[in-house]
Image 1 (spheres, rainbow, N blue to C red):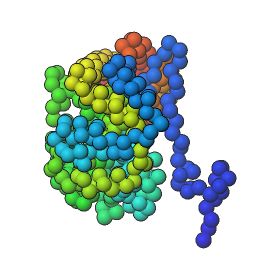
Image 2 (image 1 turned 90 degrees about the vertical axis):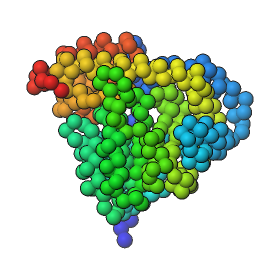
Image 3 (image 1 turned 30 degrees about the vertical axis):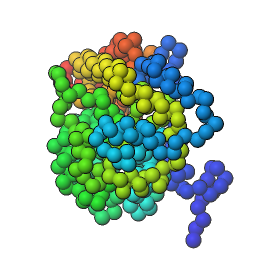
Image 4 (image 1 turned 60 degrees about the vertical axis):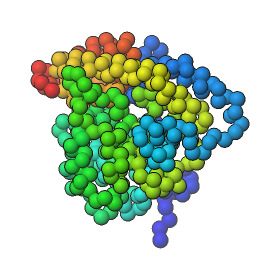
Length: 375
Ligand SMILES: *Cc1c(COP(=O)(O)O)cnc(C)c1O
């Protein structure tokens, strides 16, 4: 038996873990610049939410309610399910990790589209399972037929991300239902809907055919939907997300999730965000961000950039080999973006003041081969 190589850490680590890139947060925005790299909500927290958080300050010597029952009840009522069919976690990334660990181990496979959410590969590696990445279609959407074809007896989890981070393209309800009909009913399917609130369902350019996990609840014994308060609800800093699905699957994830990781402050902020007046205001802001996104996309397409469908709070710039150079130019102009060389750049829709700079810089960098070409 060969001992694992001593790692840089000087202790024996799992080699596949030692080889993982540590999480690197986007560079902070320069003074007078804008951070458009983490899909954060640019609006300040609502006063009612900030005061709900502050009110939890007096009890921080106590552990939080381990199951976040009050929040689960609120969510259950909203989605027409019992509180037991809701699991709350420290961001939906923590829930993704819990579900993957509950279902997949060494020798097993986890199938997902690629490029998709950058956290998926690391979460799968940590579980010990193997990632099977199915290339996106040329339009940057999921190729669900190819994903279904990649499923075999070793597959334990399939992850579908709609709208897809970082490309912005949605999966349609018809595509998703056809996928569910093809995959084995004992295969866990995670539908990651971190950006669902930004999907435009009416008006010009709407995608009313986009999948909405809410309409699928109760229909499949193997489907779990994942949502978050980080993006549309502007609570990224508090770490709170939720899963809805069949109780036996959620029970397995309750066993793998780190206990007590949703704090009283996080629960209080989420509950305050669901109060009708607060939520109406938050969803108005979502509408503002979505309209800004549509404006940015249209302007970039007019410049000659082939921007795919954009239904999250970000757009995807397929800058190819020029990715690093374009991201540097944006950075020099004060805009921090997320570059995925050599594919493209994800640009969050942030403050209105960032838009003019963005459009000016990108107008100077349109690849010659793209100029004048329709997207
Ligand atoms: C942001 C994001 C999440 C969740 O983030 P949390 O802050 O952990 O809730 C999940 N999936 C995708 C695709 C995301 O972009």
